[in-house]
Structure formats: structure tokens, C-alpha cells
Image (tube, rainbow, N blue to C red; front, side, top):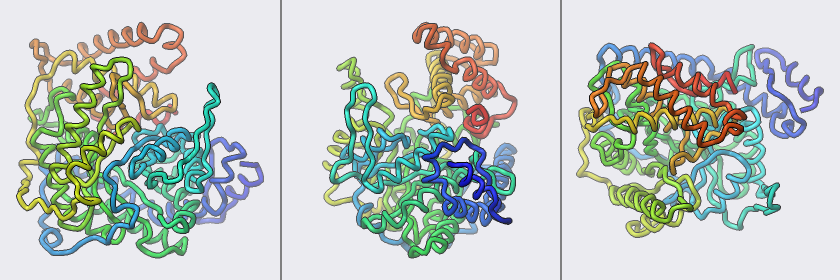
Length: 539
């Protein structure tokens, strides 16, 4: 942005005083316009205190759980759960969403995902995106070009061009969660909400173009912990539509049920957003992380190796089936979770095993009643579609009410059994460090050990290590997991990473900083709420 444009923004009158403190290349002025930033300031000023109060409420609930309270279905909202009502109908381009692909907001990824043959592409500012200033602002530029159908990319090494096909996937955007700030933009001297920043810029620049194309501004909402946080989003939607003078109900959202507390309030979340919501999604990896985090003080909630905590486990299967039943009763889509596997080109046998896991996962989801599913790689779109096509007679199966499902609080809180192995411990250390190092360099979606890792899976890794140390969990060989054992394995895994990468590549990265942050998180006396909160100052 030019100095003159920047000064216009910095002279905004109170109470809409807003300051951009991040670097301002000239191309950013197309996104960080005075009008767009005034919209950010409007939403921040109107909703800041309510957001902060809800985050404080999270801490209060956590304190109660630490002291022994257990989540349950809310007695005060029982009338909502028992009443007969439905959400507003889905728009035409979200009626069939059987295969959705997700990924960060870099230019090539957006083009490939929109061209992948998936029904929907979720462009992610959250778990698969490292929120560097460049990634955040340039991601908005890329999405604007995608909406305009002008987006192009040329590989600088091969010269290969990438352009949109005639019939791209429906675009849905995931802003960052309520807990995150955008430190490069200040309102009234304090960082603005990252969620409102991402949402406001995309909506301001693209809502009318999307409507004119016969689609609309669609969003995925992450990490909600209950219906009051959904109510805040709904209030934001109403205010934003009034501000931009677009019809109420134009914005549509799908909420990820990826916290254990939200699983007890799915009906209430749908109710609060009934004008704007079209479905719920099983955000399985963050859900496991939330399970560890919420019950962190209680040894009876210690989980086994991450690789053993699959969707066939009772507490996860119960959550998935309850989501299907709840959504279908209310006329909403029930979306399945992410397949973290990626094609393994170097090893046909390992690749076939990975694809078989994806097939089994998607077959289970659609057989249970899910209307759609997620993949992380374009190479898995056709495979996932085959499994869903084999069961779905129409665009979805919302009429499958799953009246046979009866899920209680104890079902959702049943802890799976299984061993804790040295291999599992080492994988958590290795994945946590390598992911965090990539995140610090600006990459939020990283292939490791033939899986696509993002912030959610890295969170499981570091939270499990903290939990195991906290409660003196025992390895299968009888050793107690304590800080000295973790620190020794961390040093050994760092050496393994260094050897695998080579000295030059290792030293050019940020591995030492990643290991330092990771060790501090794992050995801290209290579990940090989010890894990204601790790491964000280092971006």
C-alpha cells in the first residue's frame, strides 16, 4: 500500500481508529482498501467485547472441568432439543457436497482444488494455513481472483500454467477461530480478531460478485465451544449483511463440531444459526485434541497412541452418529471428516494400503449416514466419490434420520483403551517439531510420514506428550513417561531429523526454534490452550 493510502487508514476518526502495522507492498492496497478496513473496524468495534467475554467464559468452564465437572446436555435448552424445527434450506450449489477438498489459500492450491472434481473447496485461513501477514493478505487476493475467475499461476521452474476449468468446485472459506488475533492490524490500539478480519475482507470484496454468479458467500466456522459462540457468529452475519446491504440469509455457514463441548450443543448451534447454517462437520482431529485438552487434569482420560484413536472408537463413533442424527432431524447436511492419507507415489504397496484405509473410512461414513466427506489431496477425490456414489441415491441422505441412534453423555466421554508405545511417543515428537518448523516458515499444511499434517494433528501430538508426562503414563516396556525421557527422545529425534535432511538444509530451517517452543509447551506446568498462540509471536 502506498504511504498516502496508509495514512488515510491511520487517520480514521474515533471510534473506528484502525492501524495497519504489517508491511504494505503496493499490491496489498487492492485488499486493504479504506472501505474494507472500515468494515473490519465496524465489526471489531461492535463485537470485540462479546468475543472477549466468550473467551473468558471458556476459561471459566475449563476451570470447572479441572475441578471435576463433566459436560452434559444442557437442561436449560432442552426445549430446543425436543421441539420440531428445521434450518433454512441449502442454496443450490451446497445441496450436493459429497466430496469436499480442503487446503491453504496459496494460489496454486486454490486452482488445483477448484479443478479437482470435488463438489466443494474449503479455502482455509485456519489449521492448514500458517498466518503470516503475506499468507493472510495474499490469500485474500488469490480468493478475489478465484471468484472473478481470473486466477492464474505459472510454475516458475517448469513454466507450466494453471488456470480454472469451466466448472470449478463451489468455494467455501474458513476464517481463523475466535481465539486468534491478527497482530498486524490494530483497532483502538489492540489487535483485531483474526476471525473477523478474515471474514470481513472476503465478504467485503466478494459478496456481490458471488451473488451475481448465482452462488454466495459461504463459510466454515472453526473451533466453536458452544451455542453462545455460534450466536455471536450469527449476530456478525446479520450485522455484516445489513452493513453491505445484501439480503439477510445470504451468508451460509457450516460449523465444524471439533470440540467436546460443542458435541453436547449441536441442536443449539443449529438453532442459533438456523437462518444461515446448512450443516455440521465432524472435525475429528481437533475433536481428539479438545478431548485431551478439556480433561487434561484427570488421569482417567489419558489416551493411547494417536494412531490407535480412530473413528471406530466408541466415543468418536458416538459423536459422529449423533451429529448425523441431529443434522438430519433439522434438515441440515452431516459432513464427514478428513482423510489424512495422501498418495504415496514412491511405494505402490504402501500406496495401496493407504488408499484402502481411505476407502474404508469413507465407506463407513456414508454407510452411517453422512452426506459428504473431506479429502486433503486431489488424488483422493475420485476414490472418495466412488464410495459415496455407491450408497447415495440422490445428492444427499438427509432423509436418513438415524432414529436407531441413542447417544448419552457417557458415550461421548468413554475413553478408548490401548497401549502407549515408544514408537508413538517418538512420532509425536518428530511430527510436532517438523510441523512447527514448517509453520514458522509459513507453511501450515505439511506431508509427514505419508500423512497430511496440519495444526490440529500437531496439537494432538504435543497435547498427548503433555498429558502423558503430567500423569506419569507408562510405556508398554514399563518405563514411566517423564520430562527427562521426553527430553532425551527430543534430542534423539532432532538428530534423526538433521541426518535425514542434511546439515545445510537443517541449518537453513528453524528447527532449533521449533524444538525450543515445542519443549516449552510439552514440559510447561499448565497446558497451553493452542500451540499457535505460543508460536504466533515468532512468525
